[in-house]
Length: 322
Image (cartoon, rainbow, N blue to C red):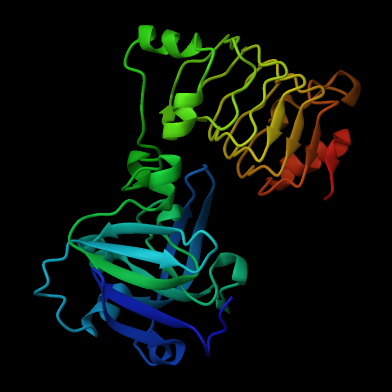
């Protein structure tokens, strides 16, 4: 990770480099504070977060030739292994965009974007990019990493709940055809994202559901014993009272998923994204460990578990390698 003295932010007009700023350059520009609520697409929110930095409108005014270039979109690129990126309209960047380096009076931590990140208070937080190193001005939009690979919405407006933008089954017949498949290889190859499918009471013909992207789907009461969900994306899945005994969740994205009262004996969770995932609700947490449907599962290297969920799973003795 670049230290501030070696970090530079480069600006591109399509494929032409039109400028760059060092950390010292940015430090000399007018700074402001912005207090806003953060809304994560997985469901959690943080109220009254205080950031400090520079408006993108201030930054863009320091670049030559933009007003006559005909650009309509802005792409933001991170210094990460996958070079993840996102984009917004130019109008949103000028109205609501920030480049920030401090939160609540302290420099950003490496985990949260050090040394600089973008901030768009009016959008879900996946539109605010950590570890930024490049800004590219475009005439045509280019969907970002989360939009391309996980079906996240291109706008991401919380008040409209614009979380996902992907294939929805338009009829019960279409959904039933999906449920009857014995081979999902075409869905894997195309990386098709399915959202809001009714998979209640489903008993898949095949136990191999690895690599599928099934978001905001309802698996309640489904018979999913010994199903392999490895490398799948099941964000916001509802598994209420589903039978998941012996299922495999290796490297599965389970952010925002609900496993309340699911049968998980023998299920193996490993290297999962679990932000805002739910295994119990406090009002219903009355069973002993011996009769608990989650007893007998194992979960190792979880990422993003909420504190109350972690404490609950700790009490069952199912967490490993914490």
